[in-house]
Length: 113
Length: 116
Image (cartoon, chains in turn blue, orange):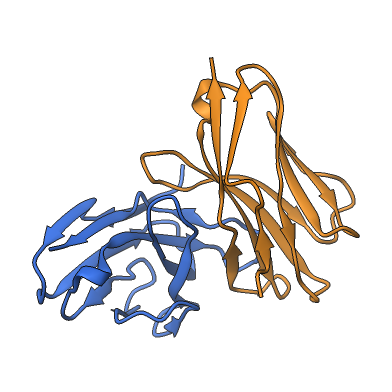
């Protein structure tokens, strides 16, 4: 079983609030990722990290930011939430070698009112 | 350009029968990996099977097998003896760029419905 945890599982919050979505993994993986996924749709990579102090933007432009101060922790922050941010956010991690699969958390379903 | 194409938005299969979910990909990189993931309605992504571009044999994992046709750039997932619990979204994904490659690109997914 993969050990990657996301909190909160669900979040309903008003416009303009600052939000931090937490993601932690206990597998010692160097690579971590954040995806945005609308219901029943494909995943879009919004951020990734090769390791500590490494963060990169993904293919889908996002107003969110990430940090990687510790190997196991990769939080995503929205400074001012808007209704357009309503979506599911999936965190994943993987070993450095590319033939290893990504392990996903259970996701955070975010609704901005 | 679409790099991963899953042409079947939805598929129905009778319980205990086999089903094939299609996936075609586009890459000029000789080194790549192909993955299939399952996403139940609860939302988590579950890794099913992996095929490397240099692998000579088709990958198999229990009831899952990958029909890898390199020249045609297809990597279809075959699920044998379908079960009701197989009802879910299935995503094909590709990682380019060798073992250090990073980005994984996902297809739009196929929703599978297993009928009792």
